[in-house]
Amino acid sequence: MNVERMLNSCETLSFPKFDGKEFMKCLSELLKIDKRWIPQEYRYSLYIRPTIIGTTATLGVAPAKNIKLYVILSPVGPYFKEGFKAVSLLATNEHVRAWPRGTGASKLGANYAPTVRAQQEAALQGYSQIMWLFPNAGDNEDYITEVGTMNQFIFWKNEKGMEELITSPLDGTILPGVTRDSIIELAKNWGEFKVTERPVKMSEIVRASEENRILEVFASGTAAIVSPVKMIGYKDRKYKIPLDPKNPSEQAGPLTRRFMKSIMDIQYGIVDHPWSVIVP
Image (cartoon, rainbow, N blue to C red; front, side, top):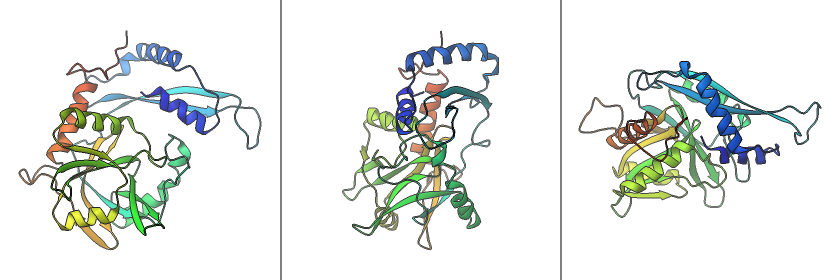
């Protein structure tokens, strides 16, 4: 739970801010009251979704003077019922999810509703999700932003032959997901490969795929944690993404599975970690 980012979303909408420490105290009390709804099985969890709406008693386009902050709790099962299931992505700039100095970096319902039609169009073409590309008129390149409602990661051998985990930077168009941060910090702590946040051109992905330098591709988000990718469609071509050459039956590569296990071990208290928040 990142209260600071909730407050940043309030600022984006010109909503009044709330006391983050008091909110966390209230959330702790709510979890105690509803503890019987917390699933005990591994891979099951209690989904916590804070929500804020404006409640000013007027009609008009103006900053809200009053807001209602509430939390929805819901027991949820495994996102992948039968383990990982790799997905296929349609990389396109026909629809734009976010733009510079827009609201893409905030957790707003308005950022998600317009993506539904684009997702339906991708499904009709046989793809699971859309890889949102942002066209840059300055260099005539398509830049990777997000996948569906998740952050995007590419694990490859860069042009210098180094193993590198790369993701788009927080430039205002990318949602600063907590899972995204967790993956970056875990990878840096492992210190086994280079970790980079920078703009990624789709042409780089195409070239790396043609040169067999792509090792794994996955997306990250709250519900799925990580979602492996097996194929990317771009400009009428399909680029196959490796999963696990040593274990053809696996639906995710070894690094993707490692991130999944590491984060879940922290979530379930299997390992002690400073990210864990204990409800007294």
